[in-house]
Length: 294
Image (cartoon, one colour):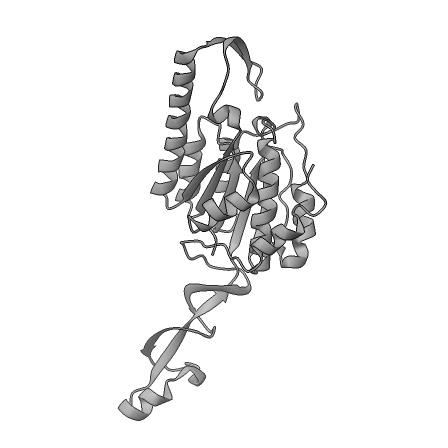
């Protein structure tokens, strides 16, 4: 469970004035606060073009007409809202670590959602895994309490659930608006890279913040162990020695590299953090440094 408002007062102050920074330009649904490449009628100048019958004379460049006796129109970039699909992986594997990966994802989702709401973006919250209806779009800073209420979810073992890759594929094949996808997940799904490739191929820009616990990043285990698949019913017995741990780290790095490389190929971005990472660190050393926010 997360705090009543998700963030502490000092954390709100860290986030005020920031904006999400997509590289792509998306067509908005309603008038918002972002400039797109589509020609429109906002106050941001874009280009000149020749006059054609029926054009709005308010956008005629009278100075050019007076000098050259040629009617030239000014065009502008329209201001529209950005669709931000804020996704938290609620798979059982996320309920691991201290703090859990899921609680870290909840906190970061509240922070990123607050940034988007404050900037006039349309936030579409989505839990990946549980079979629940999607939450309607949230707009404006006044919607922040509803965002916190959505994020205040508890993972329950045995609840009907869809895996990460299957959830991403379902979303990619849905009629959801094309926009910025912010994914908070441990990414521990063998088909994660393939699903992200499909998602990027649908025109979405994906920002993937992979969250792993310290024991997953650097296991300190020895002896004979029985491992349980928390998202299945299988078990496997291993002997944790230097060779086994080295192989584990190599396999994890290979898996994460496949995700990272896939995102780069489809125009997305990727970062890996420890579930113990605080918001101050993530904001300064990931989101700002990598240009995810401005």
